[in-house]
Length: 338
Image (cartoon, rainbow, N blue to C red; front, side, top):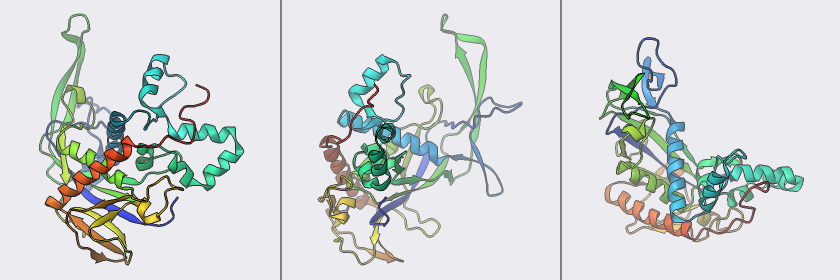
């Protein structure tokens, strides 16, 4: 799918715990806590980390809620199944489409012509996918965004906490239902790399919505979120790391004609509003030009401080406009056997 690079964006995300956090390993210790943080072997020792898969799952879930709040029946619910209760199904169908992957799979089973079309014309699959699947991927194609594991960039600190089951009749502690948690302490910082390739402008806006809500401590991570765990804040790091430029970096192939006062999305680069379901006016007008620097085959523009805040605001505005005017799909919205 799109066997060339037209644009990219990448940055380092710094995540700091503002409360105890636990992403469970799934294994209890023999003599210690019942629930412990997930560990990896790094720098010659076992070390706490935040799995990239967990971060991507939280980002996707949050973006689906945001899109559904802006316009119903635009984003899909990826876990629809025939075993869903009718009441749950009715509620979800007021807000969500069926899973994009499940719909394409069923259409391919019904028609050999459709199956071949999906295999050959992946642009057709992308064009008929919901916003979340376009950015994060589905069973039909790989996502536009890659989120790495978040490793410690500060001293690790953990603490043990007691938990107890609640008796549903008395409202007090249930006898014999005590358990122990080992959680990451407040003030521990992790860093991860986020890479977005061949993006549409509204996808930048969707990503900035997530970043802003992380910064405002509105997104929690890991287990026990309803009991106060998982509170974090995050920001785009402005420190150079491993030779990578600092700040929010947008790049395109060297020698192309993108003006310094604009950022082009995939639709503008392709100049095509048919195959991938993009828009030819897929661009942002910057309030102030940001000059390019050359790095290998790429032309880079680095956004920091005021320039980054301005980029965030106009990208979020474009995201809201696109979602509110999202076109009807040209394929069935719901599975035929429902």
